[in-house]
Length: 338
Image (cartoon, rainbow, N blue to C red; front, side):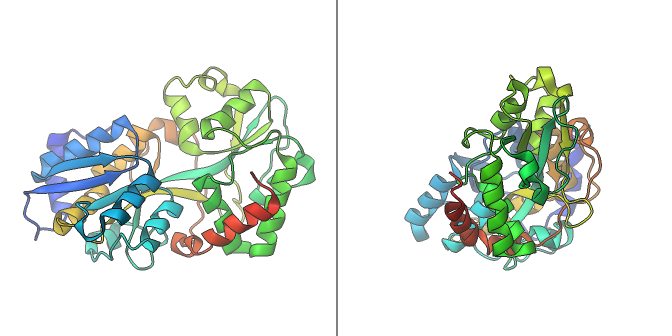
């Protein structure tokens, strides 16, 4: 259950830096497109007295805009989805290092950039879903997914999808580029159809019978548990799921995260906002409002997320994974993954 805003105020201010004046404004560039995030912003404004001015758009568009604006950019914070985009922003020079004892204490080290230019605030497991009626031996690992046993059975998104790019980059990090290329080639051979649509469309492929296996982020499925999602919820009992690699590396996790803009005119407020995103109140809302896993340990999960069960998550440094993103795209191209 979410805490009311009035009860959260004192806790938020106690968690965040006490040296920052609770006044002024914050210019937020966000590619998160969830209506439920309104609560995140309104709670911060109520707790701090800081007004949030939002610019919303697709991640690549916002990154390009910040690059074009240069030193004159009004952006204070970039909030976006997936390690690949956070790393893209860092490499574009539009973020800056952040020193915050709160963030260092609250956010696990593997969910932080090695140079403190971005921090993960919520997670989504990229896992295997399957048709329980047609498949009795689902893959137990990411490597299994590429085995010939599952030829023609797999629905998965395109190689341009950031979630898949980060997943492949994590495989490179763990097993090296040769193993990663063999895996990508195996997935291409096992595809039930050419890559198309978003993660929800992969789940719909199970329901429609186009495939027996689908790869998707957990929050798309958890959302279909919590509310009606066309083409998924009505047949959700027929879908099973596997958190891969439970006896080895653990399930791969995608991030939603943020960083302070390189030329932030309201830097102190920007850091305060990031610290707020690490508070129990905000972390709880990432789960209850958008069916995500919090980044901070011990935060209460929404019922829709609890329904997925316990699992071991991959604790590899996503900063290290990010370094292998260019190699991942090269491998996708060589494997013929459209």
